[in-house]
Length: 122
Ligand code: 5GP
Image (cartoon, rainbow, N blue to C red; front, side, top):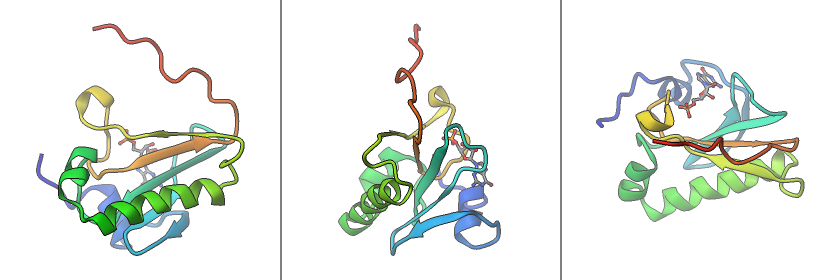
């Protein structure tokens, strides 16, 4: 899938749409999800134009990948869930109901989250 730079996260990165910023480094931005599903619900996105984890893993530089995952870790610390626990989730493609076609990780926590996933059958 080609990257569409009109997606909402590209617009947030360009400063065209506001966000509740948690932290930022050279390669990544973390902000509050607009529709939080847990007391802590952050989105961490790379600053580069990547559609999915596969796209990111294949094309991003080592520095971008390191910067992104350091931002994920720092977001967990900054939200105060690094000891209590949190869950990372990255939706990719139609089966996962990815809404925004810019690679992102959801970081959720702040309360017991229940089972990982409802059991799925084909
Ligand atoms: P996914 O693509 O993994 O299904 O989820 C996209 C996430 O982006 C959703 O949890 C949704 O609430 C969040 N989202 C969509 N539009 C905006 C926005 O304009 N601002 C923020 N902060 N989050 C958004």
